[in-house]
Amino acid sequence: MDFDLGRSPPAAQTALRFVEEFAHRVRTAVVGPATRSDPVAWLVRTHRNIHRRGDGKVLRRGYEVAERMHRGQTRKSGEPYISHPLAVAQILAELGMDTTTLVAALLHDTVEDTSYTMAQLRTDFGAEVAVLVDGVTKFEKVFWGEAAEVETIRKMIVAAGVDVRVLIVKLADRLHNMRTIEARSIASKARIARATQDVLIPLCDRLGVQSIKRELEDSVLAALEPEAHTVLRSWVAHRPEWTAYTDEFIKRASSVMRASKIGARVVSRPHHLYSIWNDTFAKGYDTPYELPRIAIIVSGAENDCYMALGVVHSSWRPVPGRFKDFIASPKNNLYRSLHTTVIGPDARAIEVLIRTESMQRNAEYGIAAAYRFPRRGPGAHSARGRSRRVRARGDVELGAEHLEWLRRLVEWQRAAIDPVRFLESLRCDLAEGQVHVFVAGTRLLLPANSTPVDVAYAVGADVGDRCVAATVNGQLAFLSSPLADGDVVEIHTAGPEETKGPDGKPIGPSREWLSFVRTPHAQLQIERRLGLGARAGADPESAPPVPFPARVRIGRAAISMELRRRERGLASDMPLHTLAAELGYPDVESLLVAVADHVVSAEEIAGRLIEQVDSGSIEAAVAAAALPRP
Ligand code: MN
Image 1 (tube, rainbow, N blue to C red):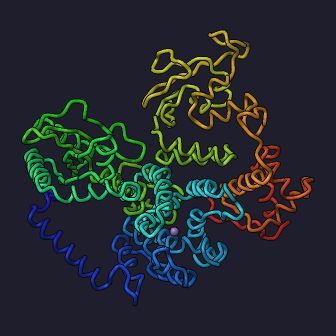
Image 2 (image 1 turned 90 degrees about the vertical axis):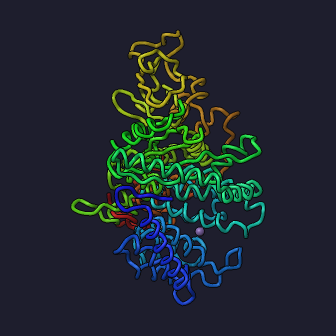
Image 3 (image 1 turned 120 degrees about the horizontal axis):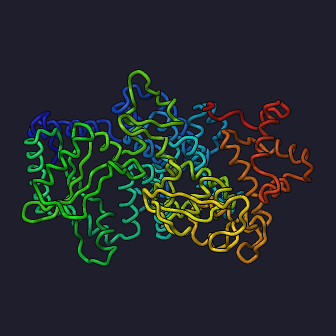
């Protein structure tokens, strides 16, 4: 049910929808999602339905290359391999992504699984496509061993820091793999589903792409809890009474909106299966249960949301404690909406979400909304130019604050050379929520349960090292007290002549701090100051010596990450050999180990490598800039 008040009557809407759906079916039947004669037609059509000026030619070229390179390869299901990249591109086309992203999707497995090289890809399709494909290309197990998986995630995060579309391609890739997971063995099914749940779904949530997140969660449920999934699917499909109640409420809500002259459409927003499972079976209940839920999408501005809320609350009694204002205090993933629960007809509770059209778009598409609804007119950025700083139309500007967590991750991976440590930080950061706190008039975004010490180190290493006390919202607080959203924090530092804090203990970080700080940044600073950690090797108990091959890999990873951050890459080991000799190391391995051990910094090595190439002392061994400069 979907009423559009103030525009056309419900009957006309329904008729229109019917016609559209029929036309869609005819198109599908005629062209088909992928016909043998023209497998790309459906993709081009979907893309150009959303982006009139989308380039169908380059999509075809991308498909032809991918098809040729993958020819002869099959998926576990027996289908030709090309069906996978084509389906991934289709998912992204439906999401409304730009042409570049779709081309990258078509080619996303070529470099990893075929003889096609990154250099060839860059020549054929340009630097932007190359960055996206490189970002989702796995490191080889042969060379990276155990570290391959973690390093692959780390590489993806770094690439996403340059171009966030890397993550969107990765999510679509995983979504198709989850859709087709039935073909896999039971063991790999569980492994893939868990990894999806662990890292990719939280990432998807951070990017705010609910449309993909819902399906990923449901497919994880299907893989891990097949029976519950089957039960819920049929339960949701067969409940005429629930549906009738929701439809009836939609009618009533529509008419009170109309009576109050608030332009709005009212739609049903059923929960997805995973969310029902999470609220019932996961908590030990043995019958499924779901509150009806509707969304009132106002056609006016933000103010109308509050007017609509007033109308809803005066028509039906609100349930105390259930009102949440995510417009005034938005979640950190672009999601903005008012939430309330009211007692509807027959004394039944019903959830009501209230939002504007643009909030609705952001709720559904998150970061992808910026690509699906690009800004037009003067000052609008072309799809190409926006890759670095994504902007959304309307009231929310993406790319700045909303991707702060991504920037933070990119920073962490530079600080945490140890890959295992990085993955831990990533999991921890994604699993826990985030809080905004204010310090000295600026707003900081930190992982949930961060403490004043985290704030102090976020302000500066020196502030962290010398902090002795903190006030939170004007009250003196423990340095270890977890901070809540909106807290105003003030850090007190010891003066230069003081050696002892108010508690009589010497000033400076203590081991105890390590037990409560949340940010890897603070942790690393404290360890550095105390001379602990894997690098210093001062604490053999907590940090066993890292074996030589691992240090070689870590050193190499650190350098390539640093180069990547500067949008460069190593095309061969030649420059490393030259540099190792120049710096007096017997071989490349020794240089890499020195980097891993922090004897020499990755930044310095990367800087020297780039210098070498730019000065022309080595011809083109470090690939030229992969991306246009910011
Ligand atoms: Mn793939």
